[in-house]
Structure formats: C-alpha cells, structure tokens
Image (cartoon, rainbow, N blue to C red; front, side):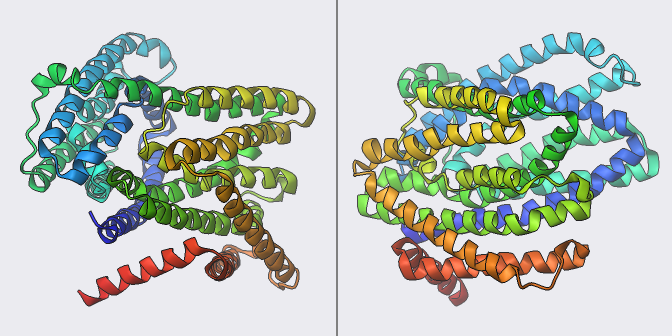
Amino acid sequence: MTIRSRAHKSFLNARTNLIFYFLVLAATFFSRKIFLEKLGDDFVGMTSTLSNLLGLLNLAELGVGSAVGYMLYKPLVEGDRERINQIVSVLGYVYRKIGLVVIAGAVVLAVFLPWILESAPFSNLLIYFTYLSYLVGAVLGYFVNYRQLLLNADQRQYVVTAYYQSANILRLLIQMAVLYRTSNPYYWVGIEIGFSFIYSWILNRRIDRAYPWLKTAVRNGRQLLKEYPELIKYTKQIFVHKIGATALFNLSPVFVYAYTSLTIVAYYTNYTLIVSKVQLLVSQLLGSADAGIGQLVAEGDENRIQQVFREIFALRYWVGGTLVGALWFVLNPFIQLWLGAEYLLPPGTVALILLNLYIMFTRVADSFNMAYGLFYDTWAPITEAGLNAGFSVLLGHFWGLNGVLLGTTLSMLAIVVIWKPYFLFSKGFRLSVWRYWRRVGVHVLILAGVFVLIGWLNRYCPVDPAAGYGVWFLYSLTVTALFALLLFCVMLLSTEGMRTLTSRMMQLIRSRLRR
C-alpha cells in the first residue's frame, strides 16, 4: 500500500469521524430532551444504569480486539488472504467464547436487578425488556459483528462509523417521532432492539462486498488458535494496559471526592464534561491514522516510518497546542455564560486540567508502540496507576483538587512523557531518544512563544467574551484561528515534520481536485 493511499484512507476516517461527531452530538442533545420529557428522569436514569452494568461485563473483551488488529497488519500489507481468513476465524472463535461469558454474567446479574433497581417505579417486565435490548446489542458484537475488526485494521473504519452512526441517528429520530405520539417506553425499547439487528445485517453485507474472499470458519478456531499462540500473549499484555488505564482514569474522581467538598466536585465535573468532549473529538480525528501506522511498520521501511512519525508528531503538537491554548482563553468565559461566575475554578486549577489534556493530546509514542507490538511493558500501566494514587493521596491532602490534578500530571510525566518514548526509540526505532526530546523542546518553546504573544494581544482586546453566546463564539473562533495560524506558520518554518506533512496534504488535495 502506498503512502498516498494510506493518507487518503486516514483522511476519509478523520472526515467521517468529524462529520458524525457533530451529527450525533446534535441528535443526542435533542433526543435526550425529548426522552426526559416523554419518558421521565427515572426511565432515562434506569437506561443509563443498565448500560453501565453491561459495560462492566464487556471488560471481558479487553485486549483481544487490539491484539487481533496488530496481527492483521502484516498479512493485509502482504495480501495474504489465507492468513487473514485464519486470524479472523480465530477472532470469531475467541469472541464467541467471550460472548458466552458475557451472557452468563448477564444472566447472573439479571437475578439482582430487582434489588439494584428497587426504587425504580417500573414493572419488572419493562426493566428486563430494557436490559435485554442492551444485552442484544452487546452480544451481536461478539457473535455476528466481529468481522468489522478487519475493516478497522484495513483503514476502513469510516465504513463502520458511517453505518453505525447513521443507524444510530435514524434510531434516535424514529424513537423521538414515536414518543411524540405514544410516550410508550416499550416502543422505545423495541426500536432499540430492532436497530441492533438492522445495523448488524447491513454491516455484514457491506463486509461481504468489500471482502468477497473472506471465508471464516469459527468452528475451526480452536484448532487454529494453536497456530497463533501470540494472540494469547498479546491479549494478556494489552489487557493489563487497558486495566491500568481504566484504573488510572477512574481513581482520580475518587480522590477528588475524598479531598474536596461536593460543591468543588460539581464545579470540577463541569470542566471535565467540556474537556472530555474535546478529547473525544481529537481522539476520533487523530486516531484515524493508527491502522495506517500499523501497516507502515509491517512494511518495514524505516525511512518512511521516521518520516511519518515526524509528521504525526507535528500534527499532534499543532492540534494539541491550538486547542489547549485556545481553551485557556475561552473555557472560563463559557462556564460563566453557561452556569454563572460562581462556578468558575481558579486559574491554577484550570491550568492543571489543561496541562493534563495537553499531555494526552501529544501521546505520539502510543500509536507506534502498538504498531511495533510493544505491549510487554506491563509494569508501566500498573506503575502509572500506583504513582497516580500515591501522589494524589499525598498532594491532595495538602492542596485538595490541585493536589489530585498534580498527582495525575506527575504520574503521566513519568510513564507517558518519559518512559513510553524511551521504550519506542530503544526497542522499536532502535535510535537515540535524545532526538525525540530535542523535537519536544522545540515544539514546547514554539507553543510558549505563541501563547505569550496571544496573551499580550488579548490584553488589548475590547471584547468581553462572557458578554453573550454570540460574542463568545466569535471570540473563540478568533482565538482558535490565531493559535492555529501562528503555530502552523512558526512550525512550518522551523520543523521538518510540519513541512513534509503540509506537502503531503497539498498533494492529497490536488489529487482530489483532479478527479
């Protein structure tokens, strides 16, 4: 596969994710209002509770999908259809076993639902019918939709996103229309189940058209699994990483609750709600290239790998710097407009929130470690979670919310910022990590310079961004555009990664215009 085709598929993935991100966000916003009005707070709360409970059962999958995705990169590059069929067959076999575990766990959990939802003002029939709707959606992923992982590994995630989110939006629209006429929760649940089957049927037809040669034999999966012992090894390693990440991000809220008042917790969650939406958007945009990186590494061209690494490095630091820099100026005015000045957090706290976000945005090494199969540093996520807990307990005792946030920062600095790049350069690239640190230093200095300049210009801005939503929107647009433009120009002049990335994007645009 050529660099150009990989870039084109990455562009399609990013564009599709971006379009559906805003469509689903709008549809969810309007549908939630209608669901609350027609079904009530209790029903919406019950659906959230049941969804979260089944989400816990889905932890049984942790690692398998990522391990199989990594194993598919090389045969996809080589066009080895027999090996692809075997790996997908093994995936189907393993997923079927996981699906049975999820069903068994769901049956056990179902016994306790009347006690868990004892205060819910609904009949057991409605509770179990709703529970069944979520279980059907989860189980179909294991028994029917498992082949979609091939689309993801082949950089065709845009197909999965387009079909899934289109079905999701259509489902919400039909549910809203039906509720307007009936306000009957049973219809809502029935539509939920129906669309799970409709999506599965459409997706699998699309997979059959894309890969007519794909012939999986799940019944042979057990025997084939013996030929791929690395699947179990990689799954165990990735499982530890994902459990560590889950512990890391679920521990921080606990420490916030422990060392602050409920009022501060409410203030803090207002900020994290906004930040999480921005983080999701960036993840969907920049994560669209992960499969392309995996295929590139499978080809083994070290010069191309280093070129792409520099480009993705520049892209992440440009996007991360732009958004974090702009959020510093626009986040507090938005909170003030949305909720009131009494809900504002101090500048130091906001700075720590945004610093942690910047570290998350610039995690360049993660995608390449995954592409190289560097999962065996299983001590790293455990250490990161332990450092986070230790620092948060210690610093939270003295500085409350700021101490907890600083604990997260220190744990990520140790593992995400220091260890992960070193691991990649020493075991993957087999190059000196100092060239990475020089590149980091240059990009951080560029961001600092642009930040100081825009801060100086902002002092002379006659506009109060908290004066109204229209004013805030124009102010935010201007600040974000300034950050994006200035960062881009300085990086274009001073970094090779931005120059080659710009050249690649221009070539892609010109090729699209010629069609």
